[in-house]
Image (cartoon, rainbow, N blue to C red; front, side, top):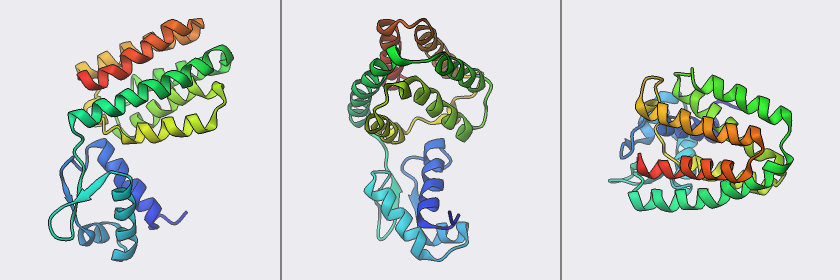
Length: 202
């Protein structure tokens, strides 16, 4: 795919927002982004419009757009939906999970615990949860999980190995992984619920 296509530019901007490199509330200008990516304004404008339509950007002053700041209420609503959707995905997957799923999830968690680069950490976290849910086999449900996760503006740049929030996150992932490995559906679903609820409390 063309690295300067609107889709690729939108993906790179989304990654910058999720990692905290572009802060919530920051104003983004077509001219600045065109210079950054070395392209005309047209692909930048299309990329910004797609992010606006997806709820990542909102109108600012004049013709500018700014990064949406998620309110506490919006975060609560998002987490409530994620608890329902991801809980169902995990419940479907538990009786169908394989030894390979367990091994892969374990390997991903080990990598998560030593990773320091925010974008890589985000990708590993998404992969970890995908492995937990994929045995359920419902592709539309998995796509919805991915869509909802993309709305979560959790700042992965705060997840440094020595940070307290990282320690909490690790304990929650380990509890979820242990229940997944043991095939204990009730315990796994409770651990997932605790993990997602913590997104509001942090």
